[in-house]
Length: 448
Ligand code: NDP
Ligand code: 2IT
Image (cartoon, rainbow, N blue to C red; front, side):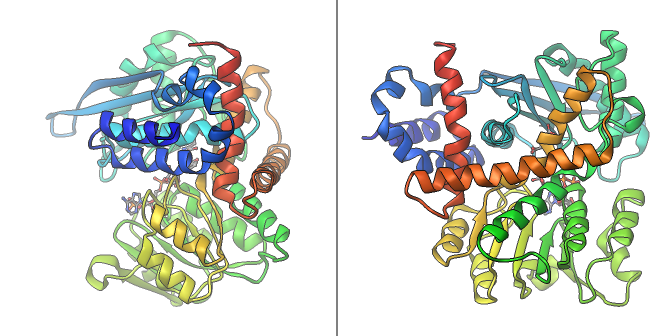
């Protein structure tokens, strides 16, 4: 049995009931096959793949807090410190009822390669909790965040592990967590990113993931003789990534006709009104039905009642920006039948393996999230740099750096795919380019 297959089997056997983690490892290892096989003896002797798929450290803890009725609630907190070969652990905190150790491990594993692709010195980590911020009062969210940080602070720090936002964790949650860290540690340091501008945050971090997704998509289309301007785009999600993807797509001359949340989706024939979307989602924290109620050109579709989603709409470009496995084989078939030319992932692993293969087999340009959504973590690393030098850069400076990083990521993965004889396979290109740097650093640092 080949080394890659041996490791795949081991991961499934040793980590039962973690299907998302298996899926993430499978996608990466399959496309690394040619690289591993070229150097199999050395990698095997050093157990490089065994070390790569085993987190350096996994922390799980109890998070008790008191709700507004005086009832004690108990959640589980997680931080997986996956790989620190190229820098301190870096990655977001997800707050969503679906969170479990397998989800955090898949996200942490992806983060290793994503962070490597940015070209910046950051290792891979991820954390979160099964706490659901939806429908909670600000005081309840604060109580949870303070309790969460009262345990997490022991394991993080500006030079060891720097968490940030993800699903359910935005500026409000990062603020409460930062306040509690500072209070317990008595230390004002850049221990979290995505902070508010008044206490060490970076301009353009809020926009970075969505903007970065579009910078990379634009460059990828250009390199294939196409232009984002004039294209019709479907976006899923209506959170941080989706909103700023929408904004940048429209600035670049595309028309975004859909957004979604977990219950429904919007088709807006005039193009999504970003100001209205921000008001509904960022200010009111309301549902998309409110967007439809406020705009004549918008139709609201209930996902469950209709059994439909935004991938049934005829578009040129699809940007999944909500969550894992939200674009399956039936969705891929519908997109291809409608003539889609490109799918670039804003979320982490939103496309199933089967759907990815179908899109690639039908010549759809496909960029995996670890490359196309890397603008968020890249700008987090720029926030760390600003915190270290105790300076703040202008929006234009950060945005220009972000753009340069995304263009660079695309060319690195394009070159890697070509070098290994898989021209146009951006999944393979991203995994190979991300892996090689981490593998070299791990090898250089000995058996640790
Ligand atoms: P937000 O919490 O801001 O928004 C999440 C959006 O996705 C909401 O519209 C939410 O709908 C929807 N959603 C969440 N879970 C589900 C689900 N199970 N089914 C259907 N819809 C769902 O999160 P972000 O925008 O920050 O994150 C979106 C994706 O992007 C995630 O995969 C995240 O890991 C990834 N990402 C985020 C980065 C960042 O900087 N924030 C960086 C790189 C990747 P509802 O409100 O109904 O739950
Ligand atoms: O998935 C991701 O890259 C993020 N949620 C952002 C992580 C970060 O450290 O900014």
